[in-house]
Length: 165
Image (cartoon, rainbow, N blue to C red; front, side):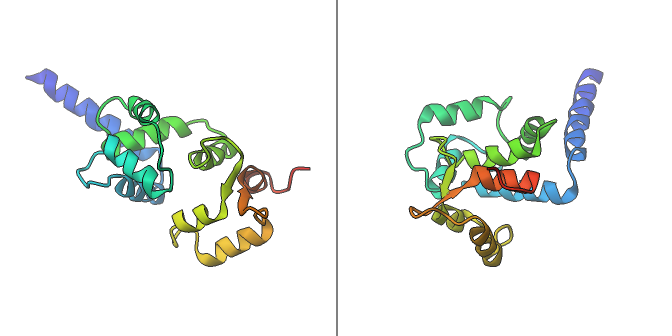
């Protein structure tokens, strides 16, 4: 009977260690993201949740293989602790520029380096992208005539402080 207690203690320690990797505000933001993705509100992110999340973000024709690959990255069912652990592993030692670029790349499967201005307006939650912030961003980084925002340049300026030539 002692072995299960040890296993339980180790599991609790592992999860508390994950929570110590982030500040409370970051954990709250991850929780909000998890809640948005958990479309069926069962406490786990599964195949259908990912597909629904992509659809809500305007990516309708996501291949099942892409979703399967994402799910394979998890060691098992994706509850909030697993979700947080996966982000902790991805972000550990990551360069801030790469981290921000990878967030934008989720919405740019062709790797063009641009995003539709309308996509940012639709997916931007007022808390993260208030209208004034979006207005200032578009003034500093105007979309091209087709309405595309060069997010690679935007990320470079955010992380380095000046535009690339």
